[in-house]
Structures are given as C-alpha cells and as structure tokens.
Image (cartoon, rainbow, N blue to C red; front, side, top):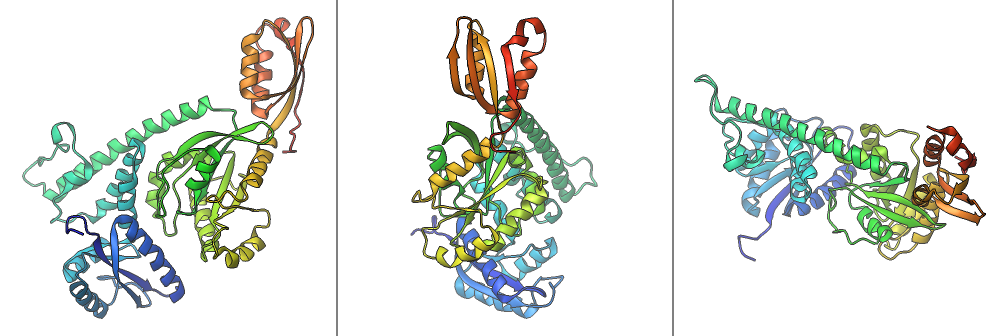
Amino acid sequence: MSDRVRLRRGILVGVKLRGRTRGEVEEFLEELDRLADTAGFKTVGRVIHSRPSPDPAYFIGRGKVKEIAEMVKELKADAVIFDDDLSPAQTRNLEEAFGVEVIDRTTLILDIFAQRARSSEAKIEVELARLQYMMPRLVRRWTHLSRIVGAGPGGRVGTVGARGPGETQLQIDRRIIRSRITQLKRELKEIERHRRIQRGSREGMFSAALVGYTNAGKSTLFNRLAHENLFTEDKLFATLDPTTRLIYLPGNRKMLLTDTVGFIRKLPHHLVASFKATLEEVLEADLLIHVVDASHPGAPKQIEAVNEVLEELGVDEGKPVLMVFNKIDKEEAASVLPLLRIDYPDAVEISALTGEGLEELKERLAAEVAKTEVIVNLKLPYAEGELLKKIQRDGFIVESHYTEKFILLKVRMPRREALKLRKFLFKGDVDVRRDLVEHIQIEAEGGR
C-alpha cells in the first residue's frame, strides 16, 4: 500500500475516572476503535489510564503524557484519539507534548459526519455543528479557516480583511465563523420550511421512523421493507441522510417509513441540536420503530442511550414505540436475547439480513396502522368521480354496491382523513352534499 492511501495510525486513550468501571472504559474503547476505523484510522495502540478526575492541563496525568509520547514515536502514530471531550487548552498542551494531532471523541464523530454527509441539508448541519464546536477552540496559530467554513463565489471566504489596525487574526477568524453560523442557521430554517410543506402533502398517511443505535441494522431493515437498495455498510453512521418511502403491509394497509441517522452514547448535545431539522421526522412520526442489535452485549445500554437522545429531542413520552430485536441470526444473540426479553416481552425478533421474523413484523406494523383507522359509509352520485379518486387514494374500499343513482361504499381510512372528509362534505352548499354521507363511524378498528 502506498503512503498516499495508507490509513492514518492512531493511539486510543480511555480514562477511568471516578464512577466508571474498567469494563465500561474498555467497552467505550471498543466503540472508539470502530469510530476510528470509520474515520479512516488504523488503531496501533490503546491506553487506559485511571485517575479520580481530569487533569486541568492535560486531562491525563503528566507521567502518562510522557508514556504516550514515547508510544507515538515507537508506533509511528499520526494521532492520539481520546474517548472524552477535551478543552481547547488540553488539546493544545497534548499536541505540543506528543508532536502529533490530538482528536477528542466529538471531533472524531464530526469528522465521520463530514465524510458521510451527502445531501445539502446534511452538509449544512455538519458544518454548523463543526463550527459551533470549533469556535471556543480557536487559537492564534490556526490559519486554515478557508478549508473549514467553505469558500464563497470565486473561492473567497467572507470578508477576511481586518476592520481596523487593532483587530487580531483571531478576532477576524471568530467574526468569520459567527457570520457563517448565522448564514447556516438561515439556510436550515428554509430547509425546515420545505420539509413542513413536504409533510403537509403527506398529511393523513400513517408514518413511522426507524430509530436505534448506530449499526443496529436500520438501513438493512429499511431496504427489506421498502424494497430499496440504500447503501449499507458494517461501519458506524453509514446512514446520515433521512430517506422516506411508502411501504405496503398486510390487509391492504400502507405507511410511510423513514430511515434516520443512528444514535450513539456520549453524543454531543450541540450535535443533536444541529441535526434537529433532520430528526424532525422522528418527532412527527406516528410510531417509532426502535431497532436493537440483539447480538451486542451492550444492547441494554445502547437502548438507554437511544432513549436519552429521544428525550433530548423532546419526543412525546406517549408516542408509541415498537421494539425490534435485530441480528438474531448471529450466535452472540443467544446469550443477549434472554435478558432483553425480560424487559421487552412484546418486542419483535428478526434478522433483517436473512428475512427471519419479517412477516411477523409487518403484521405488527399493520396492527399499529389499524389502530388509527375508522370505517366510513358513503353514498356517492356517479358524477362525483374526483371525490371517488380521493377516497381511493386516502383509504381502502372494503365494500361497494351500485344502485341506479349512487355508489354505496364502505371505506376504511385513517381517522384524521375521515374527519377531513366529513368537514369537506358538510361545508358550503349543505343541501348539495349532505346526502352524500350516510354515516362516519368514529370507532377505530384497533381500539385506539
């Protein structure tokens, strides 16, 4: 392999602070190893350091700093990667001591997100998150602002000239970043407005969002249910852009399904805030499908991490959640599943890879859709062709009978669509449209 394409060599550092067990630190380092691999690093060394609290200057002890500096030379490392977030001063001091780049957990995640972003929306959200994290970390020696904030027309990056003889380069950099952050927030608001318009066009249709820990298999499941071929990879954060498709379920039912970015433990708060435009699909969904890697020994903690992010997003506690235990085809699942079943006896167990359990999952999803449906009995004059098309689009015709003047219909449709239909039929010239409705039974088939 040539030097041009070789993986960067990284040393991972985990710190066992007061309240953490060594097992937890080792588990976090395993995850950090996968994050580093996704970001393009080859792990060449690991260090676990125990201390009661972080050192203000280096986060780790000074003796450990010297030890890692020797490791960097011996292992020819390109970077030292910490599993915790570092202060600007700590990062600067460690880089001076090691002579190589020092990366903390949040910076690593942001780098991965930057690599994975495909849509303009995701790119804006990633850039916003990076700039907000970078702002307090600016130092006088940093001179590569144009690479980070992006160039404007003609390759120029904002107004880079000083506003007066007393303005330092650091002040200029901060001003440029503040200006860029304001611009990105404006662009995100416009994206959110377009999303609301798109959701409005789908209003009335039952919607579900796949949520879960990163690499739980959400995209593989999405592909199975939606007959899609979205990119999947056995790496963290393979999916960054949300995708929504119409899927068909047993009993002639249908729903909109959205695949979303995976969550992770110790996910930075500002990153969640930056991705709220994308994650609005989660907030608006009628049902959350929580996909869990049932072969992972840390599955219970991963479930907790997902629930914490959902709470931070402001997801309604009363929103229905269907637990789906994925990867049951793996040998490791045999020891994890019994523990999960105790806390989640109603979960569906599947393998999105092999297809096992998918029919049961579809039946459960159809049952969730049914809980929101009502029966509408109509008699339509033959002249109401456009109205008939709307009814066929928004619902499912259970029975139809043809008389001399009318079509008698028994239609199953979402409750909110039935209410909108009734409002439409009774507005305006009541004498013309009142006799079109025999009865709207506001009783959901599933009882909700």
